[in-house]
Image (cartoon, rainbow, N blue to C red; front, side, top):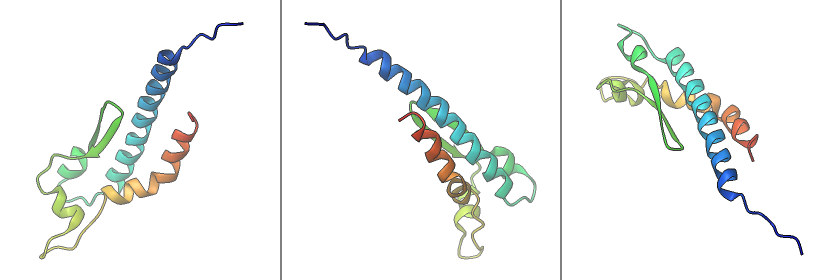
Length: 102
C-alpha cells in the first residue's frame, strides 16, 4: 500500500497568494474606473480614490467626507455615482480572474 502525502498547507498558501494577487488586480480595475467616472470640481475627490487589501478582502474608496453625498446624493443634490458603477463595469472581468484559480 502506498502512502499519500498531504500537502494541503502548501496548496492553501498557493491559493491565498493567487487570491491576493487577483484581489489587487480587481481593486486596481475598479479604482481606475471610479477615477474616470468621478465628477470633478477641484479634483480632490478623484485624487483621493484608492484601494486597500486586508487579508483576502479588497476595498476601493475614499476618505473624503463628502464622497458619500456625491455617490448617493442628498435631498438638495442628485446622486453622481462613481464607485458602484465602476464595480459593476468590472464585475465580469473580476469573476473571470477568480475563476482562473478554481
